[in-house]
Length: 170
Image 1 (cartoon, rainbow, N blue to C red):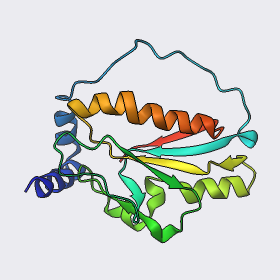
Image 2 (cartoon, rainbow, N blue to C red; image 1 turned 90 degrees about the vertical axis):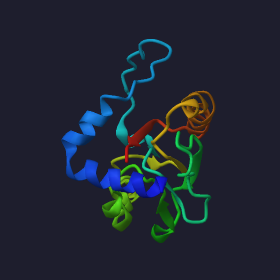
Image 3 (tube, rainbow, N blue to C red; image 1 turned 135 degrees about the vertical axis):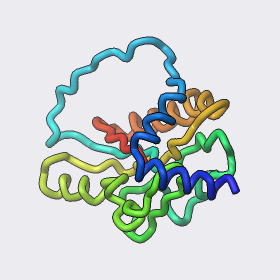
């Protein structure tokens, strides 16, 4: 029953944006560590490696789907190779209407657009790996996300030499 309720709410919030805005006011933001320092980007796009990190629930069909049964979400991530075939993607996320993204993954995971940009020389390269999260995280899962999953993905991106990360929501 919980998943059906989530999908119904996602449809309602998509159709009635004011309802979504009202519900969002009830969510307390999580702030830790103070102000994020400004770090100007000085490298040229043409010499930059770009990765995608999405909270849209994107993963490969061959990977374990995100756990939609947990009321406080799934703080884990999925490593998604850039060379995965177009038909290999799936979206597991009940908290937004992803029917259009199911038809064209680039709406929430612009992998093909970044490949085109690399081919045209606009960017140097698309990172070898991109990362998918399920963006509905609350309660105890927030700490797991902030102390375990997110730092691990940041470490992996840094080790791969990624210069730019595009964060896409769901």
